[in-house]
Image 1 (cartoon, rainbow, N blue to C red):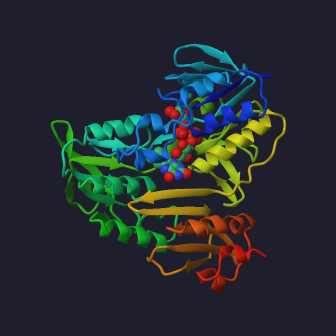
Image 2: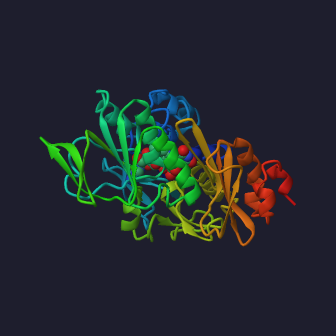
Image 3: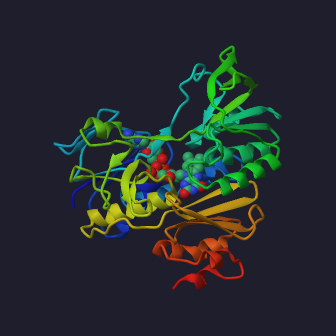
Length: 406
Ligand code: FAD
């Protein structure tokens, strides 16, 4: 069987190596990973790992020996720097060239950095890797720091919750007029704003950053779009990621916002697949080409790629799902709310547990479940089927969601 090279030893790359062996793949599998760690889970980085409730070894998806036992050649601390699609080979940063039969691009993304003046000052942190969190923790040894979080998305809010629980003063800056504007409804945005404000976080909406001020090379303040400056001992930036596609783009593959792939994770090159955060794929739940940044997507696309390599292709049709933990609240989302034309609150808005359902032309396309694992479990079949549901029954917590399946 043709050798498989997987660029990226993250959630998707690890799942692919595992699924290939599970499916009986006998050829060589080489995983090239830029980070020094074996594949690990990122979700706890902004949750339990930042909170100090979990150590690095407990983030690893598998014990290091798992990979050796399955003859997966894990090359860590190495980077694929170039791809020669015609010759079917990759070049590592070390200069080594490796041939492939299949190249699977699973490189995730890197945090979008601030580009304003002062962006290079010490004390500015990003949240993507174990190294990022270790750096942040090492910079946060004193109590009662003034922390400014740039970006009111999931990562910024999760970090805000943990840092606030340590007693630091936390301000969240969001350019949009509500939190989580890209991913959820105003109802859920309101809930999280109240949650954070209730814990003493200052939330500033419709507020942009125009610059960062510093003394002796270290950040001391954040200049805001309203002309004022917020004092800051530490700044945490969570404003999205840029997919890591440069070597593939340089090899001539279309990478408009991630690697363009079809529903089988196949790129424009018949020997190159792309999966996970870096894959711009057609998604039936969005009726569009999107990148999804979630564990679910990384795992399910890895399985799709494994099936392609094993000669048994099946399209990617999995229902998107996601979760976020902030303070004592777990939110679980099934489906994608993009394009909804109706919102139904199940339960009482703001009073846990409650869920927010999204319909499009009378069909259930997504549900945000706040403190309601039961709704999350029961809605999955409905969302997968995009079932037509009666909004009145949907709103009635006395009616189990599973009973709404025709
Ligand atoms: P990654 O896991 O990012 O792995 C890609 C790897 O490739 C990285 O190690 C990178 O260094 C490496 N790489 C990049 N370029 C190269 C190269 N040229 N050569 C070799 N290696 C390279 N998802 C959820 O579903 N729920 C959550 O609650 C949640 N919370 C999150 C919290 C945080 C702080 C973060 C950062 C992410 C969170 N996510 C969550 C998202 C989830 O972790 C990602 O969607 C998932 O890790 C994507 O997997 P991936 O394999 O595509 O990319």
